[in-house]
Amino acid sequence: MTQLTLSIFDPNTLLPHRAGIAGLALALDAINPSDVPFSWEVTEDEVKLSWDCSDQEAILSLLKHTYHLEDGYLDVPALNLGQQEKYTFTEGVTTTFLQHGKQRKQQKNPISLNFTVDEGQPQITRSFRPVEDCYYTRDFKEAFNTKGAFKPKIPIKGHHLPGLVECFAHGAYQESPEGFLALVFLPLACNYYQLPGYRSAVVVPEIKNLKEWVKRRKKNAGSSYRDFRSSSSGESALRFLLQDKLLEDNQDFRVDYCEVYQLGKQQWDGSQSYLKQAVYRVQADDKVLALYDSAFQFFKPQVRTNDKGETWLATSKVLPWLCDNLITGKPWYSGFYNFYKQNELYERKGLISMSQYLDALEQTFFDAIQGAFSSFLREQIIQAQKQGRPLDYKQATDKVINRLLRPSTQQDFAKAMVDFLSRHRSKATRGVGAEIYQWLHKDNNWKQARDLALLAIASYTGKGNDGTPEIPEKVLDESEISSDSEEALEMSI
Image 1 (spheres, helix red, strand yellow):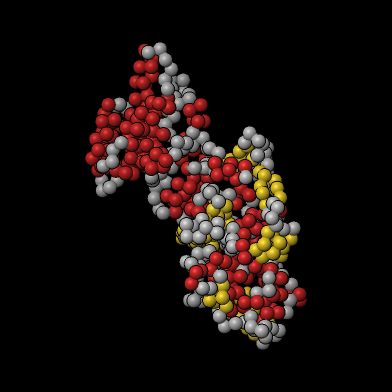
Image 2 (cartoon, rainbow, N blue to C red):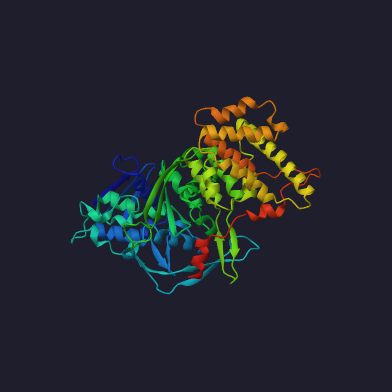
């Protein structure tokens, strides 16, 4: 009789192993004990397996009841996926764990799939290559000897486990039977995301209680196409943690952190499209997740249609930069100086909405800058009227922003800032000299002040005498979300 015990508290396990043990617990939850030649017990921290047949017979039976190929999709009955969720799961796994051509076989001729993202909006059209064969539905001969017993050390290709090993050129990763079994079920525990630029991300959660996690996973098993498309690895982590937080189960067993493996092209290997590029560990923080939730509402992906009638989901340019700040503990607007220089379009309406999430000191400095800019605009309007021409609001805005972009030292920026505030006085600067001085001279705070000052100008709307925004609506629309050029390219291929 063979007995195996897989524990999430085994000191020899890594985060992917612990998640894989949870995936195994989920798979077992959907199996009828009378249909298989093995028995099991799942506790809060362990999965115990036992059988009287050969190891190979037991494991192949377990896998046969876990992974199916149906209509070209990799289907897992334990996840209870719908049609759209089967697509996102299959695409997610084939661009991560099955990214190498030796790990799966797909049809050469793709088919077209249509998905509804928003009611009343055109459907998204995606190209999909049905899966004919894959690693999880094979015989796993490398794991067993000629008598059908587990080998003491089982080789696993590094490209099959993105992020677990740096490079597979030095040979296969060697695993114990318990470790091997955990990694085979890892895909059931992960969430998958498609990123811009032909990249993908896989999120591996931290598991604290197997039974409670299985309940939560069954409620949050599949992803719609909207949830599958993410703007960055950082956003993928925050979206996963937010979805876990919103579940109504016992919050004592929510995921405290997760790891994100970003996959894409690497210069050292031109034959594979999804190799490890970066790894992030992201901690769950209620304040950060609430801020991300609001940001996502302001910078939602939008359905776009080109002149040929082809549709795709365009993602925000602002959201990945903002999320990278959130996962590293920086203010959400940090680095706006560099972001503005690299992006002509910066989704002004969303930034205007996000500006409400500033603390008291940030708000004081922010209001002072916008007050001075309002005074500057009034001067420009009067000058334009004297010359008998309408005011070019964009040109006026760029004039001030370019003035703030020039300084490269704290001293130069402080000088430019004081000059701007003193030349264009407003009520917002009265009595706040100490706060402004703190922003400009305390420690190395000036770069953060520069980011906030630029944000204040870029997100300014103001109110005229009649209560309408001073910045015309057409100016706001010009900086709205742009079409994803990489997505557009993909649609044309």
